[in-house]
Image 1 (tube, rainbow, N blue to C red):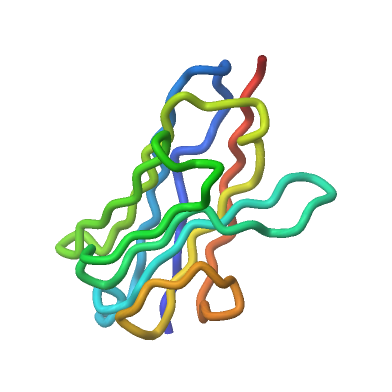
Image 2 (tube, rainbow, N blue to C red):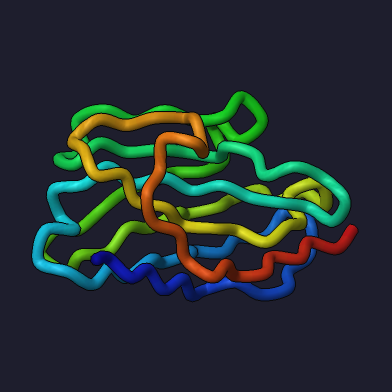
Length: 124
């Protein structure tokens, strides 16, 4: 069993930055692909970014390319999402997810474990 705990959310003005962290428990967590998703009020959960177990494969949603960076530190069992040039439309609850395989995926259905989410609010 893997437990995921997100942190780093908050409120910022447009153009600002935040770094989200996702700490994973479980001795096999560092062999899992990880992803970030987000859900705005009244909308479906959307893919943001994903990273393979060793960081060799990374995908981003078009809406965040060039602004967000996903990374991981397997020694700390932690995945990060650096978010720069934030926009009001980035406002959402951000969820970390783990997939019981090495391979990155942009589909929420492919993930086995989810965190509780952290709120990100960007004001104009």
